[in-house]
Length: 590
Ligand code: DGT
Ligand code: CA
Ligand code: CA
Ligand code: ZN
Image 1 (tube, helix red, strand yellow):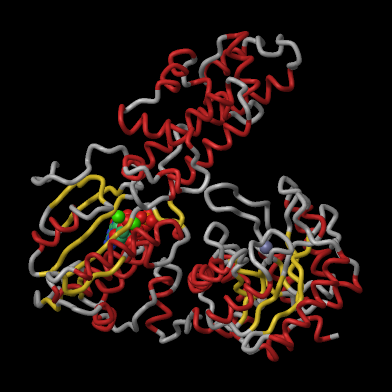
Image 2 (image 1 turned 180 degrees about the vertical axis):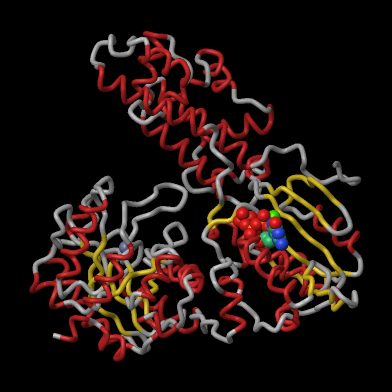
């Protein structure tokens, strides 16, 4: 359906579209064997654009594009060409020289741009199907430097990729949609015809990734509000516009559903649109047994037809005889039963956190001095932080040598004498090496205030090897916590194989804490694992892994994941004042 009014910039390409053109260009440049730095630069710009809230096209036309990190004149020229003419001549030339299928071949496990190029040059292979046919005919092994083994590998990855089909639209990281979501909400709240507004859906449940945004608002003038919403500067186009529902697509390729009801029903709509679908299904079943029907507008008595609209969400649950359920728990994992029994957990809040036990400084890959980080933490209401720069094994010139670590501890001691209102713990993020060894000597480990041990290598190892490494780390009495226990990077890598039952069980038995890393691309432990850790008696610590002052602002994401894992303040070690926290450390039990 087309809206009946004009929107400012509908003809400009969206950020995702521009990013995609750059990604394809980068892939072709790699295929042609051009400089890796150029390829990486285009890829980086594509990533940057994909995360931007404001219109890349508009920034280009206004001459502001090169203000973005990593965007130089060369990339700016390509983007400008695309925005102004709808095509990048260089890319179109490449497209006409090589079918785009060669890029799919390059993406295959066991291939890469070099191999894809050879398969094209020597066998004219231009698609996954062509890889399969050539491999089955034994034509790939006949190429110089290739053998039966690499042919079999290519065949199996082509078959896997063909079976998988095209990738579904990726889910967005919660941290990447926070800004557009808040801007849209604020715009609604500022409008005089809007009575109440809220962000609902998976965003409100604080899921680590969201597919689309769901906004709800109450008003007596839905047409005015719908029109206003569709014309906001973030909006690239209006997909659908009615009196109860407006669907828009933003410049940064986010789909947003806005639902509108009269103020008397705001609580019903908010409850409905918050979900999850599973929670709503269970809630509907629960209310049916009590002769009630729940919908977006009211709670209805089935027998009499009497309707109870709810302006407040809590009233919906109250009518059902339930206490209000925090959105993070609404996943159909026992929350309705718990609400019925008055047994809902008293979930941990950001304000409960007194310390942050995973902080980097410019001694390793952090960007600011220890003092800057300490002051930034204090400004954010924290009482203590542990400086946990990487130990020596991390490589790339990032790790701190043992001697430097001793010097750092001394500097921290002096800073503590000088700074008021914040206490620094000297620490380290040590490496659990491939054989399970910790890469610092015991005397150095013993001299520190807190040690977090993480796996940064050997991700391909089978679960037995990974768990053996963890066992060995957990046996070390100077390891106080395990950092980002699964190693996942949301949207980028799965992490290694992990047996959470064993890890949490051993952590509980040895008194080792498990970290919830609050960086929104980690959120690791994930909620389900955090809940299991709690059940098995392991203490959790929510840490930011801050590499700059703004890193501390990610703590709420860790808290959200903890809440999704049913954690209370008492389950989280760093809600304690420093002295109590120290008392919980296994090093203090010696
Ligand atoms: P997402 O978008 O995949 O990250 O997750 P949600 O939970 O935001 O899902 P979405 O956007 O499809 O739906 C928003 C809310 O609408 C959902 O949380 C609850 C409600 N809803 C969706 N499907 C159903 C359903 O089949 N039954 C009921 N009762 N509610 C539904
Ligand atoms: Ca949604
Ligand atoms: Ca939706
Ligand atoms: Zn770290």
